[in-house]
Length: 93
Ligand SMILES: O=C(O)C[C@H]1C=CC(=O)O1
Image: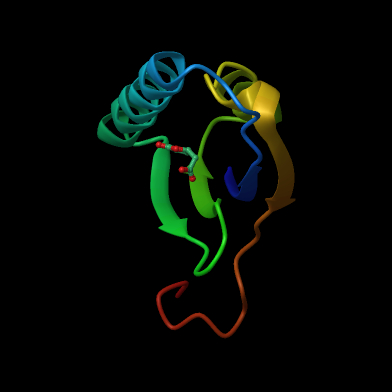
């Protein structure tokens, strides 16, 4: 199942080393899922500390597990949009 996910990050003031470690953990976690094929796209939202990502996962439970375990999850607002095939998509056959 494909899902579009918008993640808005709102980091509180924190120790600079803790912030650096948290962002490194987030990058490693995200890139592992990208290499594994479940995190298909990640785009920065221009002008905002947010991203729009596309996930290809078995079901909503798996997506929830991925999002819940994001190191930045406590500092994010997340919107999930399930995706379906568009009838005008020339690749859909
Ligand atoms: O910077 C972000 O958009 C937040 C987060 C999501 C993946 C990642 O590496 O960082």
